[in-house]
Image (cartoon, rainbow, N blue to C red):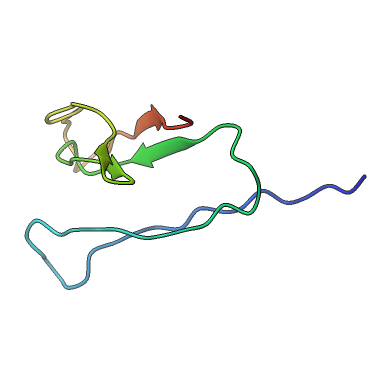
Length: 80
């Protein structure tokens, strides 16, 4: 039995110095059967997250905060 290293996440960021309403997307192919998956999003509370064309949550302005001091992370179970 060999241990495998879990894949690492990468930042998806918008190009440019101050883009307005960027569309950030990426594609990936899982190496093995997916048994659990979480989508972690920080969009300063203003985002619409989609996975495979379906909206992940109906959140609107999720967790706005003083982002000069703290940026909240939103976690969604996207296993299904």
